[in-house]
Image (cartoon, rainbow, N blue to C red; front, top):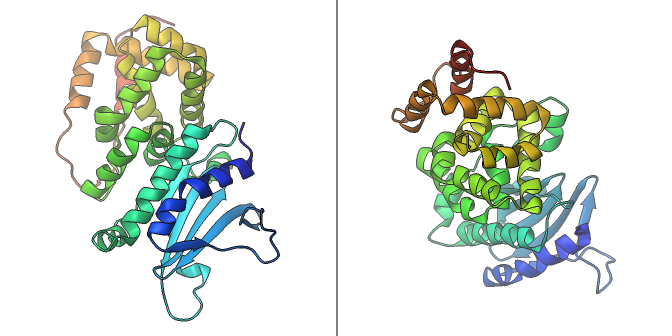
Length: 304
């Protein structure tokens, strides 16, 4: 398991070239020794600051999030209030390895280059990615995990999802979860289940279980139907998933897979895979998960 200082040292090293290319240098805390990490602490917040002619940057670790803030150069002393969040990524010291830190740094490097590139800066300022729900907010019940949080967490595990995740939001000005997962995210999840490697599956289902247990009904539907429904009732895949799924999720997912294997389920899935064109949000109706489960009950589905 990585320590906090190990992770911060790797982040500092792997963002150094991008920082230098954009004219930023790290801020050393007053009284710090030469070999100390340039880390500031404020309660539960741990961060590193960088300054340059273009402005300020801050890399911050808070709970299960790694945050990147940026601020433009301005006359006089710039305050923390001048910083705006330009990147939010999942951060889990207990389960992260060097590959996860590398992925995180790639995200930071891309965000820094985009933010301070003369050709891309204007677009970046007008594109504000949605903020994931924090673990503390979900655990204390003030917020439920949403589809964006699920996508953000999985993009931290699968680096190849980062660009499609960003492009999805930039295209619509909102995050279209069904499109993102049907085109990109679900395939990564199913491929992990198919490989059945213990460490990788444990990591994946730690994310899925947490999001499902503390997520909104729409997010639970997304996991049970759009993502894990793609196991298509394959018994080998379902048995592998069953080993890692939490109790709250296991039975609904297996029921959904049985239902989707039926003629009524195949019809419902065909409808899900051919949604109507995107339109602005309207009053919410019962989700596909609820409709499927109701339909499954009407089919007289056999007990588990």
